[in-house]
Length: 116
Image (tube, rainbow, N blue to C red; front, side, top):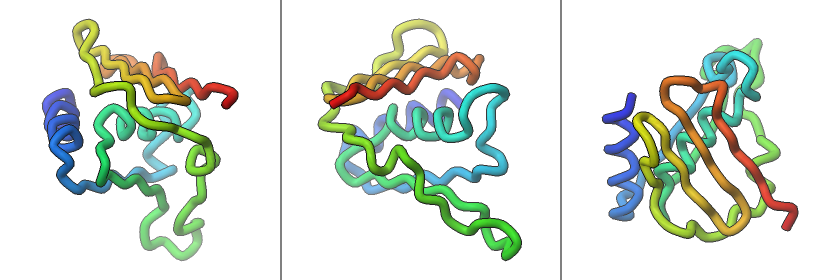
């Protein structure tokens, strides 16, 4: 996973268009809100032309696409690229949010929004 994250961070930094998708069915990581883990991974790599979506696939009995509360929150501009601050640990700051991810412990994910 770490090499894929590094690849995505590089793509985002170069402005290469990319889209990341997560399923609410598979996105749950133990006690972490199902959106925090995939949204945090996306935000580590997001660039100017990066897009995120979530949905349950083609199963008609499930909600096909979800509008997440995170979509309505002010993110603001990134204060820089994602930083690898320890083995398997990444962080990134935005004008209105902070992301902290430990790739070996998804329950330690922190996605904190400012009150702005």
